[in-house]
Amino acid sequence: MNWYYLEKEFYDYADDIEGVNIHYLWTPIGGVADWENQRATRFMPLMQSSSSASLNPSSPGAGTTDPSPALLRKKILKLPQRILDPRSGTLTDRYLLYHYFEVFQDGSRHYSPLYTEEIVTAANSQPAAPEAVSESYPAPPLIATAAYADSKE
Amino acid sequence: MIQAQKPTISWVKTGTNGGLQLRIAYRGPLSGPDLRLHYGFDGWQEPIQEVELEQIEPGLAMTEPLVLANHLSLDCVVTDGTQWDNNQNADYRLWIQFDPLDAHMHVSGRGSGELGITSLRTAMASAGISHGIVSWVDNKAFDRINWPTTGLFPLVWVRPDDTSVKEVRARLAAGFIGIKLHPTVDDYRADDPDLDPYLEIAAEVGCPVACHSAPGDADPDHIRRLAERFPTVPVILYHTYLGPQDGRRRAAQHVREQANLYLETSWCRWREVLLLVEETSPERVLFGSDASIDGPHHYCRHPPNVEGQETYNEGLVPLIGALGPESSRRVLGDNARRLFGLNGNSHS
Image (cartoon, rainbow over all chains, first blue to last red; front, top):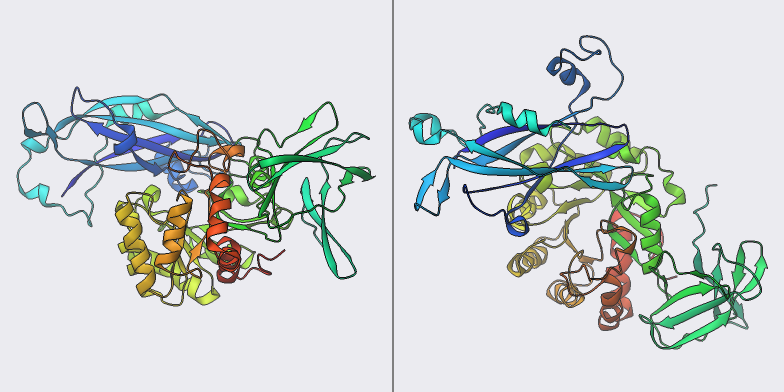
């Protein structure tokens, strides 16, 4: 099975953040999110200072030696190219992705709002050859700008 | 020499003519002439009793020797006649002639929230747990903890391609006692070849590897393949598969067939733990709880948090009774102490 890759970001908004998880799942459009049985959870690692600087050229530390830890976390989510649409009984490349962040701060656990977005992988319009990318050799991530916009804290 | 922080409630052994007597010491906030210990045995079974706590010195009061008969645990709270010290509504527990170690704990650092070390201490006191093995998703969170005072022993959280080999070596040299893997949240398969450099370090320094086990990337089949590649490294399946029963049976079968695999029991009901011991052996199962992911009431939370059916505190008494003293000591402490090279054993 090949995948659709979507990158999510989280900016640490305080110095005492001890970890961030992203929880997510997907449903057909109009479906109900079943967090009990379909949840996926991934840790969001902090980017290294050097890569953080290059990713964020407007940062005051960009291009300089900045000893402070980077505050940017990133995770590439592995999503299906198509899912079963129960209404038509066929595979569809349009579905809903739900996600929220679990933030560990000063020993406490906080949750972000729940975000919902429509995913369109365009897999139905892709030719056969590019779909043969194997799981063990991941394709370059497909960046969804909307995802960036709604995941920054 | 660094001294461990004295617990609020603890046993004090005194002996007369070769006979061992056990008193209870109280180092909590209450004091005064009406200080009393309110207690019951084996999970607050009737009859509930009270005994005077005599003030020995400021900050220390002690009971007379208690009659313990054949009980396993003592549960208690303290009153000065007007106020109660009930460990933030979690009560206190002490095990009789027995010092359990929790092989699977988490602490996020020194923060004041439910995942911080203060919360974990409250949880441990509620369950009579004085020692534990801890990890956290970010190793840096551990940098400001003074471990010798805590009774806790840290693992290095390894995330392939993110955690440097240099960091793992440095932390193991600085007192960390093993490696923690979580293939599910860190998004890799448990037999990923990228793990090999870390397992090579574990083999070199002689430390165990604890690996989250669950459906998918952390499946016991994958963990077994990792263990097969490094037969001298003890590999512990945390949770013994956090999923349907068939996974636990497969995990137990792998342990029977692969000599360096071990099971850990967090989120398993006590009858499941008993079954795992019967399917493998008392030397291959380690008690753990995942404390204090559920905060200071982790071991005694209501509604119950172990498969929604029982609490750890409720399950441990019948488990220890069913296992018997020798097997209990192995499962609830000695196996972890042996594998991780910790001093002592579970006999108090």
